Image (tube, rainbow, N blue to C red; front, side):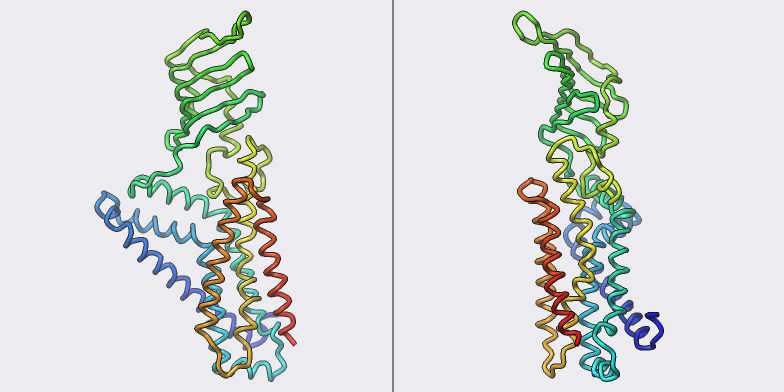
Length: 354
């Protein structure tokens, strides 16, 4: 059992206290910076205090995947360097405890943080991101992703729809063409996804004699029940990929366009890879923090670790953008760097553990 020894319980619970402290501190700094940027618009509007508090709670959940690994990074450096300076690590190593056993409580915590990140991606983060977007649009006059530039979607009956813009609040498509066949199409000014009511619709049919389209019928309002829009609404076509839970990304089998397929796999790979950052942080930092050195450069180790952390996060975000734009395969772009770092730092950790 991992808690059979007193020193194991000591390291485990001390690390938990450090993680809680750094998590609260990072979140406090984030709130202060965000308030300094948006306090004028927040408090000048009719936004209630409970709504503002709820907004910042959702911000914590939305950024859990970054706050937890960063807390793990600072905890690892603070805890191990403190034990090293107070000769606690020397005493434990002289007692025959290997580096692998010494770091076992920390690895258990890192695995628990990984599970928390996956659970957050599945249950809380999607709702929090949607809430934040709606809150900013309503109270901070932040323009969300209201429009999409000329999207093409293939429906289950073989027909296609081409639309210019989509309003996520009203659930309406604007400037829509419904192409039933090469000689039969509809032009609809606006179409509601909820009621399937179209406004200012024109039915165009190709003439056989000169292959030109002519207007067959027009409606100011018309219910288009024959359009199978369920393939769009059920397939999460209009929900941003970062707001989808892991189960929806994993279970999506129908991709209406190649761009949608690339975006889905990019965000799926990102959400599968990023929670594995906490164990990687341990593998990379433990050899630096437990070395027998009179001049342990804590500031240098901390600065290098923070720089590497934010560089890695920036690289992951860049790989998502490259994957969405179909420049590189999103799976290889996001998994190969993590695999390389795991092999490199894992080998260094195992060779240090002698």
